Structure formats: C-alpha cells, structure tokens
Length: 518
Image (tube, rainbow, N blue to C red; front, side, top):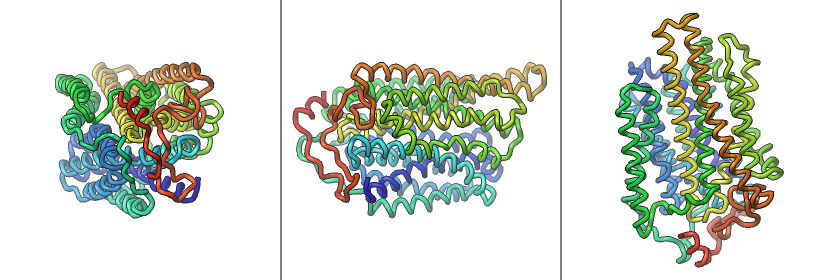
C-alpha cells in the first residue's frame, strides 16, 4: 500500500482505538466515579450499561445509514458527536447526567465504527490490501482496550474526569486528519438503489435492538426482577418479527434480508458474538479475581492484563501470513481452539496462583483474538456488494457488541448466584473459598462460548473445503470457498497504492444488481 493508503488507514484505525481506550478507561474509573458522585451500585452499573445499550441498539442502523446517507458524512458527523458527549461526561455532577452522556457516546460509536469499517472495505481493493487493512483495524481495537486499562488507572489518580476529557483530544486529532484524508464519495450511476430511508424499518430495528440489548444487560441481575428481563426480551423479539414483515413489504428496505442467506456473513457474525462474549466475560472474571480476591490494585491488574493486547502486534504481522497460507476459515478455527484451551487452563485457578501460572491463558486468549476477529471481518465483508458494505459492517459490529454484553452479563449472573448461595449456606472454608468457587463457575461461561465458537468455525472449514483450498488472502467470499472476485463485489474502489479517490469505480452491471436484490 502507498503512503496515502497507510495514512487513511491510520485515521480509520484511530476511531476503533478511540472506542477501545474509552471503554477501558471508564471501566477502571467506575469505583472513583461512584465514590465521588455518591452513586448507588445500580446507577454505577448504568454508567457502563448505557454505553452498551446505545452501541448495540444502533449499530445495525448506523451501518445502513453509512450506505444510504454517505460513509464520509456519517463518519465525520458522529465522530464529532462522540467528541462532544465524551467531554460532557467529564462535567457530570449527577449520575443521570453521566448516564445520558454515555448513552449518546455509545450511539455515536454505533454510527462511527461501521462507517469507518465500510470506508476501509470500499477504499482498498478486495484481496491482500483490504485484508491487511481489516486485520490492522481489528488488532487496533484490543490494543486500545489494553492500553486504556493502564492509562485509565493513571488518569484516575489525577481525577476520574480525565478519562472523559482525554478521548476528546484523540477525537479532535482524528477529525482534523479525516477531513483531509477520507475521500469524498461520488454519486454512482443509475443502477444503485434509491436513497429513500426506510423509517418504519429503522424504528423497528432500533427498538428491537435496544430492547434485546436491555434484556441481555439485565441478565447480570440473575433471578432478581426476572419478569422485566423476560418482558424486554419478548418485546424485542416481537419487534424483530415486525421488522422482518416491514422489510419484506417495502420497496426500499433498510436491510436486504437476502444478505442473511450468505453463509460467510452469518458465520462471521455468530463467531464474533461467541468470541467477544468469551473474551470479555473472561476479562471481567479475571479483573474480579485479581482485585477482589487477590487484592491487587487497578494499576497492577492493568499491567498484568497487557499481554491480552498482544494482538495489536500479531494481527498485522502474523495473521496475514497465516491467512495466506491456510485460509480464513482455518485461521479462525485455530483462534477459537486456542481460546478454548486457554480458558480451560484457568478453570482450576487457585487463591494464590503466581502470575506465571496465569500467563499461558492470557497469551492464548490474546493470540486467539488476533487469529479470530480480523479474519471474521474479512469473511463478513468479502463478496458483499459495495452498496451494502456498511450493512455488513453494521451486522458484524452488532454481533460483537451483543457478544460482549452477553458474556459480561452471563458471568456476572453465574458469579452472583454461586457466590450468594455459598455465602448464605456458610460455605465450608469461609468466604474466600466461596468466592473462589464462584470464580471457577463463572469461568465456565467463556469456556462454553469458546467451544461453541469452535463448532461454528469447524462448519466454516468444511464449507471452504467444498470449494477447494479457499480462504486465502484475496480469495472469494468469507475467505473463500470460491476463487477470484467474490460474488456481487463489483469493481473495487481503491486508494491503496494510489492517491486517487476511491469513488472512481465503474458502475455495477444491471444483471449483477438484479441478482443481488433477490
């Protein structure tokens, strides 16, 4: 790739880095925020949950908005909103102010991130350049989160407000660079779809995602107020049904339902949900174990967990070589196997384990992340028509957010149920043994999710074998059961190795457009 292509990638990766570092810093600062503002446990939890609700609830809509309203426009607009509301969080004097600021920040991320990913998939030619860009993009996410844990611990010592002010400087720098580097979009010739926005579909989709996300977040309360959790989930499912009905009847659907018949897209989404759920669930349990049971400080915990961010190095270096040699599907399978083994090794965790005993799990989990998320991004977008790249990106990002919410909520619920029961029964060996038993049971959640992800990845390997070696860099959809250019991709818009705007591609053929619309 040329200098301009790398500069553009740096800007786009800056957004996913910004998102990761923001989430991590806020998580580290929650105890200080709770103490300073006098928040209840429930309100403190909502500071985190509000961001998840906004992100998971609007990512699908954000991805499609990038396709219909302009990727550059959506990226710049919502990056600016992210900047403003992140900064406003630092001025909060009441819990509700912080919750509102975090919710809007999550919504901004829901529009900004799919737009950034779709700019990558439409600006770099499908094949080695695009795959390398997506792998770097994926690696930057975990790198931002890992660095955020350390930086968040340092900034919290200065004052929790700085965890909200610091992203403002990052976002401002990215915004200035993006105005210059993100290429303008040129209108395409008449074969593209109408730009009428499907408002009923958008309302149904946003409502369904918000209710489902709320139901998932409520899982952490276990059986407490379970009717509310069930009601939210059922209402969300009803709105999903209404959304499908609307999309089937409208002439200009928000989501072309036929995209769900693309096996690589579905497997990538399900795999991302399972991997992120396992990864974030394990990270949450590990944090509780180190701080609550072992008494480590937030600074010690952050340093210990840095190895989880090794994917920021491995994703752009090792993963492309493995994908080129073994194919997307096999690399994803390898990542899931490493994660399942790593989490399994942590199941017999003891109250006085040395760090050396934890290190293999941390290294396997971080390496598995590098081998899994980036190739899933490739699988989710390869062979998808240019006009639906935002939708494909939104579907994948929705899966990752729901996965993270499910993983954290599930381990919290299991830990609470086991720990509460053990304490109530005066568990043998005292409270420490009861807590340790609860940690072990909570660890079963990421192990199960990683094993399920392994099964999904095995299906992907079998599918890729049906079309030959497949899966290599530059192969067909999903890392490629088919060689050559993926179905419906159309001429690639590329800035890779060139200073030319990406919008100079030729229009799609009418025959291809008709085939994709079915």
